[in-house]
Length: 404
Image (cartoon, rainbow, N blue to C red; front, side, top):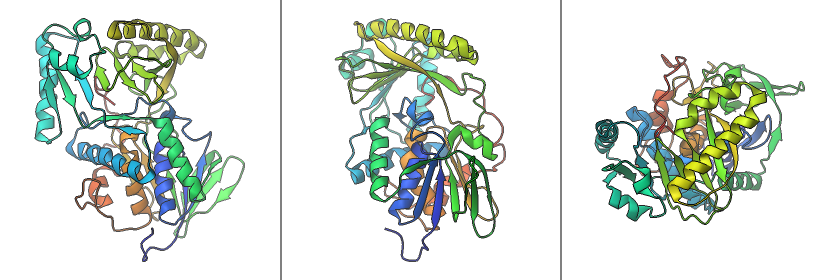
């Protein structure tokens, strides 16, 4: 329920991806009038094409790591509140297979040391441990001799389609449905925001939340350009047919990333072929490229599991990526009517950012975090405000292993 001292407000949310849906839902729960717009349909963009590994193991600096840890806990809260079945704290394995033994040890050792300093749940595991954790994986064919890996017992994955359905159902119960509309212009005055659609319709809500993902670039936010595919912004994501392969956890490595799904399918990525996303700049070549990647995925899955696992489709997935890699969350105008909400790691952060955005837009003082400590939206979001120094400077691509 809305705080008694908070005035009801008319809020427009632009974008019905995972961040927009969560923000709209939190605003509606607080009793606000919400207009939810999307240029296509709910979850039609990056949210529809996500590996959805819910984690915080490679999210420096500390403020971003803390935000992701809170994001994981917030998913527990929201799933309980909505009686959902989409968030699975299955645990995740991170293995290094490429490079010399020393290079692999350094990669895992550095991450282990950093996460222990953060008091993040992590365990080094041996080959024998891996065979106990995930016996379906042919680890001895998959990993070099003597390889160790890291296990994150608190991590897991999100069934994004079930999550979207749960959010949309709850929004509908509050009288909010997604309206199709392509926004071409947003500005503000002291009294209200102004949202112009491509058919000439003009909306004048009290405030607008811009959660349009990569399209937020068109509204002046420093978000990576997706017009030319590249490794920093694009990825290949495969989905298998339903299979009886009993994978229980997320497995991530520099060779293959694979995780279960609620319907018996598996999501799969292949880091060694990621550089080939650049070939997708030729639309005519894309169908043949995706079919070739599909075939390579099937070969790799057969090696990993020792049985054929057909891949039903491969998609070219584009990321909603702020230029410096960190979230853009906060008001962008002097009138405090236009609020930006764009982030990579959107699946991990969605439940938390939805609540924090609703608190800030509604002018609430904030409450207890999902972990139980008292932190306001400002405490958690302070380092991620739009207009921060260096926020428009493109960050270099990071190694694919554990990048999500």
